[in-house]
Length: 507
Image (tube, rainbow, N blue to C red):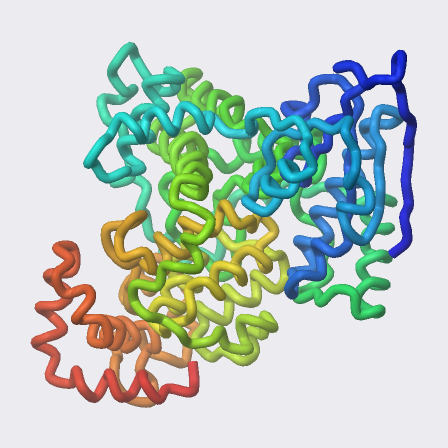
């Protein structure tokens, strides 16, 4: 790749480095002003990061564009290197400080260097506060709802004294609407999209060259950049969400329409994970919309819970559960390899419309909303027994907002139940009836969601029963699966369904 550098200077006084000359090395998840205290900055673009495993092109583009845009913003205050490996720049340096980075490997690396390590930022709850909260619960299971309530109480968001606004902590019951009957879209304005510039053009040229030279393996379409890479763009996207989609976010949070890939979702996960938005400020801005009478409480609370509750909770579980958590948890003994349709994002290889549409959307944008992730891609993988660690890597590499800390609890724990119930009390498994009620996919599918046996049997419906059959020894005692297992035992064609799904080669 060669070694390209911008703005390299050194400043010593009387032969030693002073506090004022210490250089802060920031990573790709630390690109906003909340990580900048005004001193000298170091950014390193290491090509090897993009060549470890196949990666979605949109994700590679997003990260490179965000790094290079931050360099342009910092001007003479930044030292910028484009190299093959981080070590080419940082090995042997004694002038570096870092805000604790977002992965185990990066944390080991900066400590081995001897860099001064500052506490992590970019989350509502600090690691020290989470440790105190978890440590105060001896013998009790860690639950998201308990954590979320403690954050509301500490921050005062959507609180009236000690009481939650509206008298309830959670308005999920109002946020489970099916999509409007006969609708093609929700009828909302198109989201605000950033405009690509010369930096994006340079990124595209570099990715083309790296791929042609065999240095990286990119998957997915080379589409226009849809997600923010600067703080200014991120705030425009936040403004747009609040102004045009927040009110509908709650009711249709779990719904999906073929003609409306974004629905009422915020599209803020990527800029949040790049560090471009402060999550506490985002939550406060959204809460203020309810206070001003401009947004319904159910939508506001649902969004706030995602930001100060689930997002922070997943981050802290990454450290709490340990580095080996994704590799050592496989409670359901799932070992099947991921199919080619997943690895190549080939929607044409899939007949089930919901799965094909989800893969096609991922191919086009490197993004899907949480129901497509959990109840289609994740549900399918759970039913088919795909290796959970391989699936977690795939989610990390194929989604523009994918990072190890995001996917550990989300995929290993919640989606695949590979930890046996540490994160979620039951597997998130469902048949075609759920998909038929919450999406419009089934109407255009060759499979029938009401049929579980035969050529037109829905692979999700049949797969649901086959999953329960295959895992009865491990799951039958789960109190939340008592009724499904009672129904399974009454199925007259149980054995035939299990056999059909074991040999299924068309989906």
